[in-house]
Image (cartoon, rainbow, N blue to C red; front, top):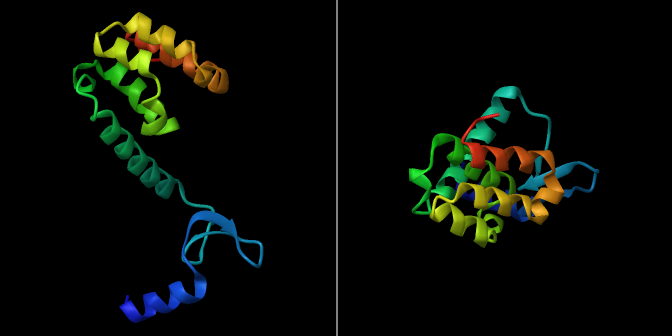
Length: 135
């Protein structure tokens, strides 16, 4: 794309980094990009991108690589769901994970607003932490 065209489109369409409804009532994002249904393949591409972001976030914790694959999946799932910033607020759970106190980490997960919000999902993740078993 020519820089001049890009500049013109941004000037006319505007640049919006959050979804909005355009003047015709269409959900839109970016530079006039209409949000439409996607294919299964595209959904899987987006999933992979989001999982890669969650893994990058998890790798910021020195203790993460030494966890079993099941427990790594718990951390990745949580970061995927809530983002790294919110995951970092689980200070007592993170402290327990740092020491390999998995029962304590599971209890901290269950004693959270996150558990209230997502219910059974948090219960499954807590059991995966506690027992090192995939559900």
